[in-house]
Image (cartoon, rainbow, N blue to C red; front, side, top):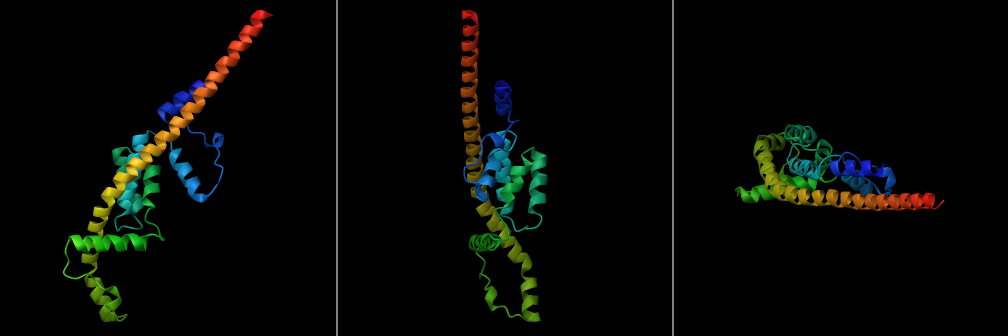
Length: 196
């Protein structure tokens, strides 16, 4: 049984979270736990997560998950880790991420003036002016998202890869120790039987 579990963990086909319970069941730890116990090869999991982070930085909120999972399916990367990475942009963080994307994109593209959105009046003329500038704003945010998304994806890849690998090493170590104990107990039993 232990030998089968060892082989399954080496292949990335078995993770049993019930054996390794979390001591503190906070929601963040549960998400982390779910991430490191995803089945699959560590590189595929890490590439999927990095892709999710990169797409999550784009101004396509609402369809980011569909876009990222489609790309992950094409490349054969882990779709669950991709979906987890996309959620870097959520209703709580979107305003901060898109604002940072806009200012970085505007500074690199050296736009003549950064938009002062507070100066728009809540009138039809102000709304019309804002809508005419929407493509420029969208592409500025998209460019800033690419500039921020690349380093975030690289860091996310390395962190997620090392987290999955470290978890699997710990599990493998525990299982080898259990296997050694079982072998020792079998040897003792055979020695005891021979003595009788």
